[in-house]
Length: 67
Ligand SMILES: [Zn+2]
Image 1: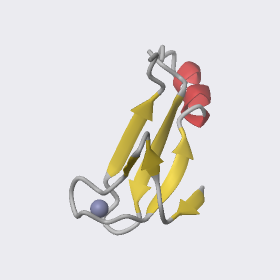
Image 2: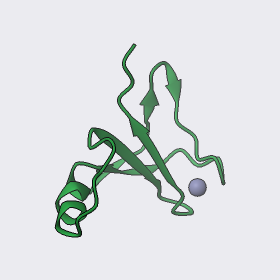
Image 3: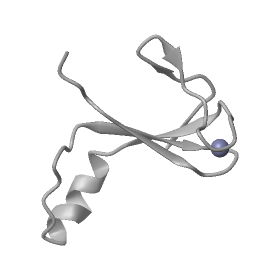
Image 4: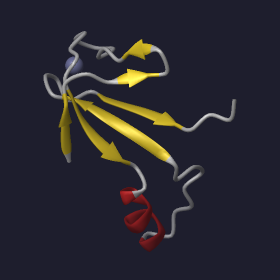
């Protein structure tokens, strides 16, 4: 996990939906693919990023959008 204190999603800065914090831990959701497939679960979209609020722990998940 890497710490990020300033996260941009598109042209908008990410703020925690719950506590309005702006510091997050970044998780690549591709890592979850391994345990998901070992459990026999098909992930609908493995290409994603998750940011976990450093303050309250709320998890924000983003998947690549086709624009
Ligand atoms: Zn928060």
